[in-house]
Amino acid sequence: MSFMRGEWSVNKSEFLSSEPVRLFIKWIEPRLDKPGSFMHKYYMKRFCVNWQCDSIYSAYELYQWPFTGTVPGKGQAISGITFSDSYKFLDQLSKGLCQSIEKADAELSRQYSVEILKWGGVSQRNRNRIIEFGDDIIDYYKHVIKVLDIDHFDAKKCGKVIMNSGFTKIYAQLIDDFIMYDGRVGAALGLLIRQFCEDNGLNSVPDEVLFGYGTGREAQTSATDRRNPGNEKYKFPRITGNPRKHLLHNVKASWLLKQIIHGTESRFSQLDNGLNALQAALFMIGYDVTINLLSQEKY
Image (cartoon, rainbow, N blue to C red):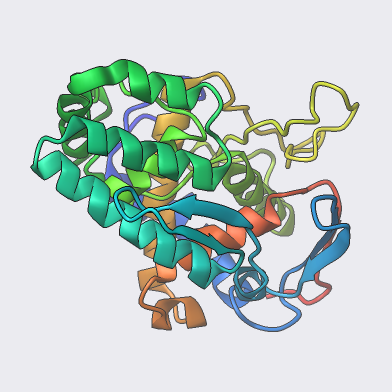
């Protein structure tokens, strides 16, 4: 398998069996749910509170995402803020979107897609792209379901796939084990990879675990991008504005997180939706990766 910092071929079995991936999974296992194993904090402007976790699992337990939306055809507004609230709502949207595709109901597919975007706070511009699909949205989604199959993904065959922080949320509702890989999830992965590299004294980030991050909304007006997990020694690429790189990193991250769930023993593996929970933990961690408290305990 060829890992290049630009375009690279992706093979699931070779990726998961590569030494950097195996070592990283071994490194992260004790940090998943042991209290005090992963300390992270920041000031969350949206809620005007100081947020902090002491393990990756505790970041999942402290998940917050306020939303209000409706399930198409049912009309009643649904609101929530917790992980459970979000994923109960998304489960309804996921089932409805899949059924609309099976029935070739383009209008309903568009409605479900827009609701997913609204939940994620990424409606701007993405909503227009959904509407512009018209009746072609059914064929597009069938294509996406086929080419983004996580177990049989072939980068050379995926063709034109729209990819950004909005569409990754839609694809996650259509495709088993396809995670929502947005700027925050990428930033958190980068932070963990950087700490892994520091603890192991690596000269640079191995290409296999080089994950891109998405720039925060404040990056254009601030000297510091709170989503950039890198430093002078360990640098990570941006995925913002690079849909192909975003897609490939999304697939690679989906493989990695699923392997962490099934290849380690933690409280995540005991959950029915452990993959979503781990993704949610990374989402919370990745809000701001510029301030981090490192555990003094070494493993």
